[in-house]
Image (cartoon, rainbow, N blue to C red; front, side, top):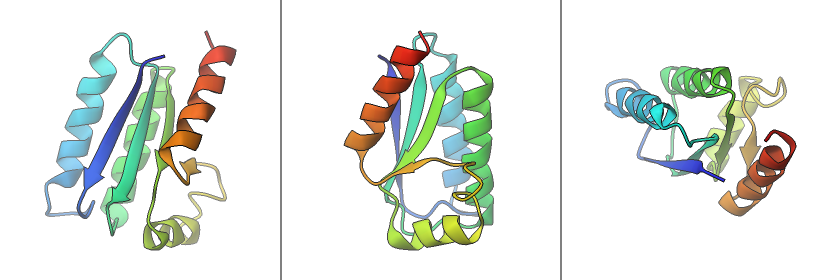
Length: 115
């Protein structure tokens, strides 16, 4: 059950290099044949700006287009509130789990239903 966990350290925003790094890591991860899902851990990302949200949506779309599972976990309250205000949660564009363990359980269930 190959799930790649990508941990974001620091702000995911314009001019930090983090957006470009996320895109490169997701692209490289999706090139691995065995990857069936990507989980982005945001426990150490205190802020995400609009460009950062666009990068997360791009990562989601690239992952889903490949037929793999995608989610976020461990978002800070501030980032969660921004996700809610932007309707990315209500419209179910980005799935967020409060911790890594719950995300992994959901991923395992997804894999058992999508062999």
